[in-house]
Length: 314
Image (cartoon, one colour):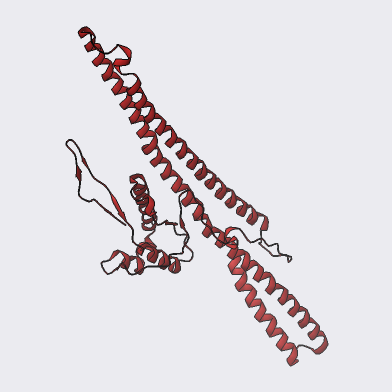
C-alpha cells in the first residue's frame, strides 16, 4: 500500500493536503505463500480491498491504512515468519508488482461477515461408538461451544459498533445544523432591532460575536462526534472482526481432529475384525499355518495405522 500526497490546495490562510490511497495485490502473494509454508500457524486475516466509491473519504483511507499496518505488525511479531525465504523476498527489491496470489481468499471485512460455505462455518460433530482411551469428548465439545460463543460475542460487538457509528453520524449532523440555526436565528437584528440606534451597536456586535462562537463550538462538537469518534469505533470494530475471523483456522484444526478421530475409529473396527479372524484361525489351523501368519500380518498392519491415527488426535 502506498499513501501519496498530491499537490497542495492553497487558500489565503490554509494549505490542505489530501491522502491518495493506491492498493497493490502483492500482499495476497505473501499471505498465500505463508499459509502454505506454515500450516500449523494461525495467520491474521487479510484486509479487504478498498472500495472505489469511498476512496475520497479520508476516514476510510486512514482505516485501510490501519488495517494494513495491523496485518503486517502481527506477521512481523513472529520470528519464523520474518525469517522465511518468501517473506525476505517480499521485503526485498526483487519483489515485483506482478507477483500476486489468489484474490478469492477470505479477507477482513469491516462490520460484514465473510460469506463462506456452510461446511467451513461450523464444527463437525462425531460421537465415537468405540471406547477410546484418552478421548475426553465432553471437554472437546465444551471447547467447540466456547469458540462459537466467542465468535458470536465478537460479531455482536461489531454489529453494535456499526449502529453506534450511525448514531454518532446523525448526532454530528444535528449538532452542525443546530450551530448554523443558532447563528442564523439569534443574530442581533432579531434581538435588538435594525441597529439604527448608535448606542446599541456595541451590544449588537458583542451578541453577534458570541453567537458565532457558540455556533462554531457546535460545529466543533459535530466534528468530534462525526469524525474522531467514528474513527475510534471503526478501529475497534476492525479489531473485533479480526478476532472473529481468527477463530476460523481454529475450526479447521478442530475439524481435522474430528476427521482423524473418525479415521481412527474406522481402523479400530477393522483391527477388531482382523483380531477376531486371527483368533479363530489360530484355534482352527494352528500358529504355523500360512493363512494364520497372513491374518496376523494384516492385524499388525492395521495396528500400525491405528497408532498413526492416534498420534493425530492426541
